[in-house]
Amino acid sequence: MPIIYRYILKEHIGPFFFGLAIITFVLIMDFLLELLNLIIGKGVGLLIVLQAFVLNLSWMLALSIPMAVLVSTLMAFGRLSQDNEITALKASGVSLYRIVFSPLLFSFILTLGLIYFNDKILPEANHRARILMSELHQIKPTLILKENRFIDEIPGYHILIKKINPRNNEISDITIYEKMEGPFPRTILAQKGKIEFSQDRSTLILNLEKGEVHEQDENEPGRYKRISFEKQTLYIPNVEGKFIQAGSDYRTDREMNIRMMSDQVRNIQNSMSSELNNLNKLAEDKISEVFGRKTVPSSGQTSTSDQKILSDLFYRNQSFFYQLQMETQNLFSQEKDQNSYLVEIHKKYSIPFACLVFILIGAPLGIMARRGNMAVGLGLSLVFFVLYWAFLIGGEELADRLYISPFWAMWSANILLALAGTYILVRSTKEMTFISWKWAERFIPKKFRKVLFGIMF
Image 1 (tube, one colour):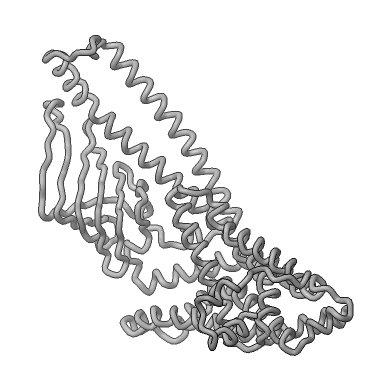
Image 2: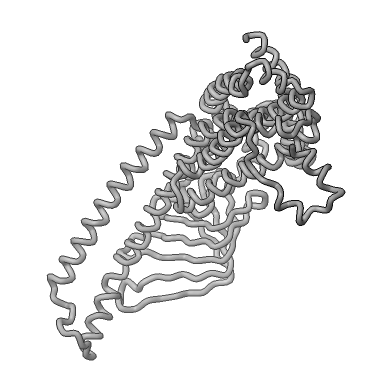
């Protein structure tokens, strides 16, 4: 039996490395096009180019290795089935479960290795690659900003940017809450703008266009001002060390290991819990203050004097409403950050686990395909790649928008494919058809049936 295990495993080695080379080459070409645009414009030396290439090769391998497992499984079992070796093994009393055992064991070891790689090596490589690319971009300010997230590192300011273009530092849909020395904050809205730093990198310069400034008059609390502008420049001093985080100490979620991200999740949960308690206390104090003054009309009908009381009450507490809105948006932003970290934690496990899933579904499909060539292997693999990555990308997007949990966002593809693969494997072991194709004969011309069914089965 060990001879059979070694023989079946040996059939996977060649297709695995061939598939790994093809898939990695495709990812490299996509990256090189982006890198060449930077090299041609910047005149970067060959040594730095090679360094950037090696550092970015890590995330390519993290993606291409599970894909290569599926390619090798389809090709290996397709070749064995085509040469009737699977039939011979079954006739000798070797079940399909034993035939699949050695690739499954190897994939389990590969899964453990990838988990270690994703947790220890990949974050460091991503971190060094980002620092290198930041230096090549001369540390553009937009490289360290995140869309749809409040920037509250600058004391006195809360900045929300909906859209960022890192190539030219342009920003769109800007909302700025500016806490001034007075009791009322100022809100600045702008359709678009451009962000840059001063020469000493200590002042943030926001060149805003087509916007409005909303503020409450300090002298007359009942008066509300709205000022429109075509262009306005906002200077925010003393941001060095608060806003510029491109140094070696700053890490994005893809530059952290599992322990670091778990610490971040705990910090966010503690911060959210503290902010909720403060928000509840603030609301209770404000309600007690309002009803303590007995300024709210008691009857269901509002007279002119009652309307004046309500109007004065609104203007007098307008700063509280702005603060309440700002804190609510900040909590929402923190919850999105928490989900982002949780998604990355689950991703470090789910993508390596795909090696096992692809064995389960690739082995029976490879046997049914009865072809061992690269075209069939890549063709069938492409279908599952598209399905798998569509689940991952869509799940990550839904988790970031708080529609589904991070667990289901990252594990739904593995669970569905594992169930489908187990079902097909069991049916194949019992030599039962798992799908009836008689319905297809009505729609497929007779001259194409043999070719189509021959490729699939």
